[in-house]
Image (cartoon, rainbow, N blue to C red):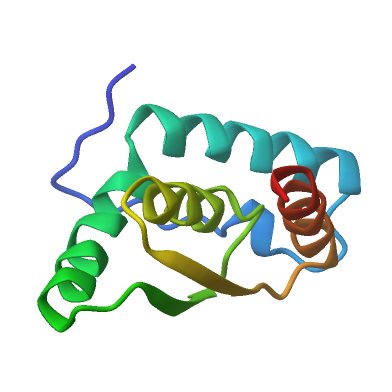
Length: 111
C-alpha cells in the first residue's frame, strides 16, 4: 500500500535505538548499503567535493563523515577520489558500536 505523502508519519529510527539487537542492526546496515549503492550516494556526494578539489588544485582531502553508519558512502568517496587522482583521508563517526565495527571491517577490506 502506498502511503499518503501529504502527512508525516513519525516513527522512531530503528537503527538509532539503544540496545538494538546486533543482528537486526547488521541487517538494517546491509539494506542501507544496498540503497546507497543503487542510488549512487557516494557519487552524488563526491560531485561537489571533486569540484572543490579541482577548483583549489588539491590532490588530497580529509573528509569527516558524521553518522557514518556502516561506512559504505565514505568508502565510496575514497574510491571516487582514487579514480580521479585525489587521496581522501576519511574519518567516520557513529554512535553505534555495531556500525563502527562494520565500517572498520569495510575499511580494512578496502585497504
